[in-house]
Image 1 (cartoon, helix red, strand yellow):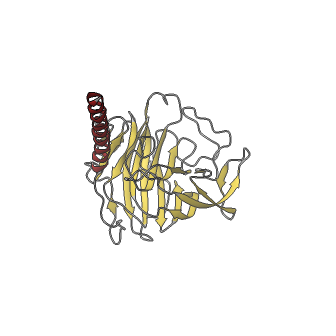
Image 2: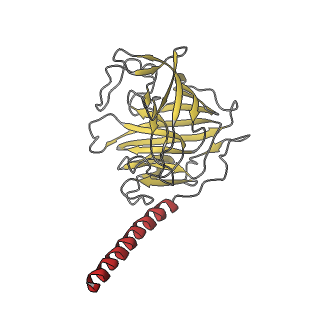
Image 3: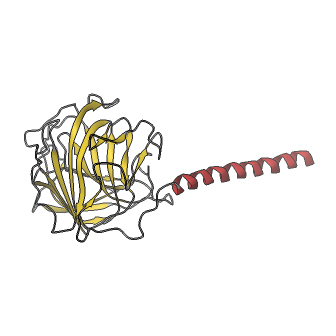
Length: 297
């Protein structure tokens, strides 16, 4: 009987050690996340160039399969351009947190796509006000407010849910003036009904002209799309002032939200199985940035 009791005690201790090991590994993984500045940075007089045309300084990578390592060089610099090969799910993340800025991003699609989206619309995203743990959403992205970059849907808002560094869900919300399209999907409409969206209801607000016949097929283009055709440069301006977000695509305001939460955070640029090039990625002081306009080709 004593031997049985000793074996039982040993099993309990062994189980405790295993659980402690798992918990330690989880804390170690979170601890690897680069520390951000104590307070979010807001550009005041000079432009902050998130991509300097030469390196990935000030940025780090997160991929679902390799975490903080990028052995396939999914994110690289090619001929002075930020080159996202798309070979994986993850993001290029700013080391610092930011708030109150006029962000300018100029991008174009490359020819390559990857399974299982090889024949689907080319897809990426600009994730702002990112807080919490890397990989908090399905092991892929930090919780954030996404400004969608996808063929036919540039400028949609999506709430990217996930957990903070303590494993607790990060609250997210946007309030938009809205309408419904032919199929009942939420679209932004200036002067429309004000609705608040959080993680308990709809997680998406489409830009005002998204084609109701949109299909997830490679090369899709709607009649009212304002992003440039495949292979041409598109400019996106995202102006964040407190909880207010305005999105312009090639000079046209396509979406707007207020009373957003969070109001600051890191910025993530997605890799989502489609090749993309970026030539301009910068933060301007509010009211001192360039006027939203079409991208020069």
